[in-house]
Structure formats: C-alpha cells, structure tokens
Length: 440
Image 1: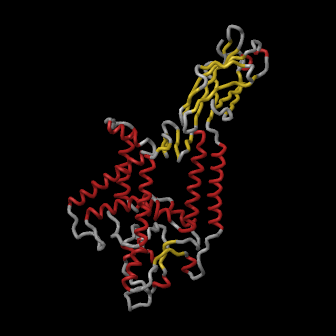
Image 2: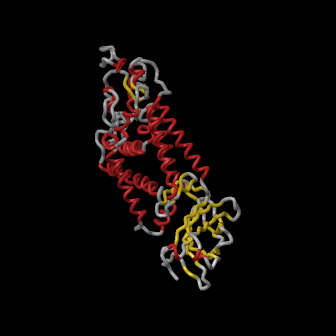
C-alpha cells in the first residue's frame, strides 16, 4: 500500500521543496482576495470565472480556452525539452501521493532500511485516520475553487451541512482518499492519458531519466565484472511504478528521479562515479553528441505557446469593461399609444466586468426620434456583476406606421468616463412588419 522505502539524495530534497511550494500555492489561492474579489474562483451558478484578476463571463469563454491552450502548449514544450517534468515534479497525483506515503512512513516507523518487521494495528488505524484527515483538507480546497472557502466555513459554523457544497466536499474527500491512499501510481501506469502520448512528444534530444548501459554493463558484484552496475536492484525497489529503468525508457516512468538518488548513493558507497542513472538524451547515450535545444518540434511548441499568449494579451487589451445585450419583449412586440404613437418593450442584459462598482447611463440614438422610459437611469451595477432591466421605447412620430423599417440604437456609457461606452442596435417593431399583430 505504501511505496518503496525513501532514499535520501539531491533530487529528493528538491522534490520535497517543489512539493511544499505547490501545495502551499494550491491551498492559498482560494483564500486570496484582490479588491474584495477572489484570486481564482470558478463560480458556475453565477456564471462568472475569476482568474488572477480577470473576471470572465460566459460570453468570454474564449479567454478560458486560450488559457487551457497555453497550458497545453507549455506541457508539450517542456516535455519535448526535458521529458515528463510535469509527472515527476508538478502533477498533483505525484505530489499528494508522496505526501500521503511520507505521513504513513512517519506513523508506522519506517527507516532508511525500510518498513518495520511488524506494524501494530493502532499504527495502521492511525495511518488511515491521518489519510482521511488529509483527504478532507484537500477536498475542502478543491471545492474552494468553485465556492468561496469563507462561505463554506460560514455554512459549517451555522450547521448547514446539507448543501451542494457539503456534498461535493464529502465526494472530494472520498475521491482523494481512494486516489492517493489506494490507487496511487497505478493511475500513472494504466489510466493517465499523458503517459500514452508522451512518446509522440519525445525525440533523440529530449532529456529523460535513463540508465547508461554502456557504462553499467555487464552488471554484477564489484570486482567480478567490468560494468559499474552492482545489480543491487535498489533502483527497482524505490520505483513507485515498479519498473526497471535498466531496461530502457518505458511509458510507466514518471521521471520521479528516485532511482537516480538510489543509484548515486550506491555508487558513492562502492567508490564509483555517480550518474550511472541520470538525466540524459538518447543522442548522448549513443555517443552522437550533446542534446540540441533548438530543434523543429521545440520551436513549433514554443511558437504556439507565445502565439497563444499574444492573442490572449491582444484580446485582453481590447476588452471593454462593460457589455450589453438587447432583446425584444416576446410577450408584446409593440404597443399603440392613445395618441397614435408606437412603443416597443426591450429587455437589456448589462454587465460590469470591472472589479469596481460603476454607474452607467443609458441613452438612445437617434436622439430626437425616440423617448426612453426606464424605471432607473443612471444604473448602478456592482463590480463583476450583471443587471437585467426592462425599458420602453416610444417613437415620437405619430405617423410612424406609414414609414419604413426603423432601427434604434442603445448607448450604455459610464457616467464618470463617457468615453467608455458600448452600443447595440435593434429593430423597432411596427404593426405592418408583424402582420398587424402585437398588443394594441
């Protein structure tokens, strides 16, 4: 149930520092607020996505797609350069599996020599209790990316344990326990899709964790063979996915570098050079020279990553802090007034995409042809919020029935900054254009 015994080494220390930083970021991000708004919050019920200072509305999902595309290109780029860096150093599956295994070793009394000969029942119970507690913490912060953790804690204090957030928290806790305590690196071996297509991203210049067979073979006890490998099998024992790195690159390898630390320790004990197992390219192993950094696939992935960033920055610079959608009232396309004039009812969907409360004024164009009837104008729209309002537009010309099809333009501008405006044009419905129907 617990992965192989820990081996001290340079890469192990680096990975623990990386794990600590990643976990701290994962847990801290849902709690951070900027100007009263969350740093990251995927608020699905409110249809708002707060991502590092940017509030994305459903009409702007292309921003999310660009972020996902940039992350994918970054994964391709770094994989082509240095193999499965993501799997070994940043994947939550690896990070939390390491943490769960470390907690179990601490409770059960593991040492550098491996597990104790007999583990007491109370230690096993304590291990699972600690795992459940850790799973609850991870599950809580996972839900915190979709609902503010402050609101979840408020619901817990109020005794409201029956909401959807609590159900997702319980499900997240169960999933984390099953994944990190039971499934562990089995997910990496059989379920992870990245392991299946990583080979397409590799080439002979990609840096991977590899065994130097030319130096290590033939393997055997020191003094009996010429190879440096003493066939201690420690690299196999410490591998969380149970592979033998000496058999070459395999898709189960997650580049966790535990075999490097184990082999370096053995080489130091037997007085032989380190890095029998290390980061190297296939080109280097074949003696064909050093790995090349600038090569076609790296340039293509890097260019795609830069391009995604440029498109994102361009769209963000052109983004307006307000938005408006105009729709006719379907229940009454037009109304005829007592004096013969015609009026149309509209529903306006307004958005304030800024992180500050704003006051907006609504006007009509052409200015002298229509009267605007609104319950409130100017309109106060809170930060990163939407507002739906209904207005009535009346044509001033009482003989509008005899005219051609007309257009009315709604102008929404910020009261303090009139240059910040958005315009939307809609048809002004007349009786002759709807077959004489509508409300009279």
